[in-house]
Length: 221
Ligand code: DX5
Ligand code: ZN
Image (cartoon, rainbow, N blue to C red; front, top):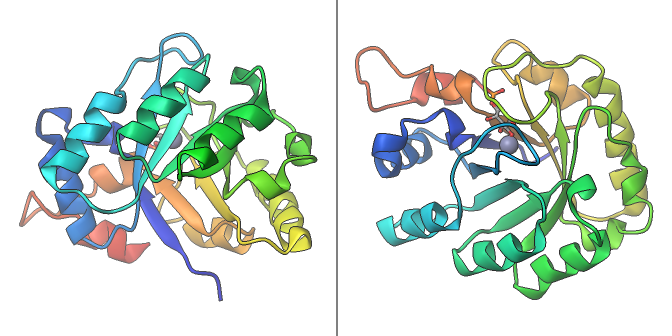
């Protein structure tokens, strides 16, 4: 039985009270903090960087932090996120000139590595690096914004990625990001995902009777 993990995307959190928001989702049962890094160049939005990751560590957050780099170029920020305490660093292969080198930089820093696939990016980027990834992240929306709808064709791509992982015999996590909701997560899990990013679904699911808690939506997953 797969070991499912829920990774709330803090892109949809209230940045003015980020430390508390992260504490609240973890207390509500989340497993991983999904940290979206956007550079207004590789993607048309600008978010948070390594200083904010380091600040969460300083605040006492000890859960895994999954840094999803939507930036170009990637290599210099890899070093910064290693220093800042990231647990996973994933990047988009189109954004790196030397994919193998970027993956190796991440692992050399003692951090888990991963590649991210946009909806139209082929999984063939994995052909020669399956032994260098700890995570495969499939985007089920075009990256840049929270709150978009899940692209249905991603389900077939998940099945293909799951088959590649099973054939490799390696313990590689299969993460899905974009438009994950309570009403589609079961189907996404059946297609092979084991790690579920959810931004708007989690942060809009704040319990009415207690504005600081997210139990209802995270438990529903
Ligand atoms: C999109 C980001 C996602 C986003 C998901 O570029 O990578 O992590 O926050 O948000 P929802 O769950 O709202 O689609
Ligand atoms: Zn993301």
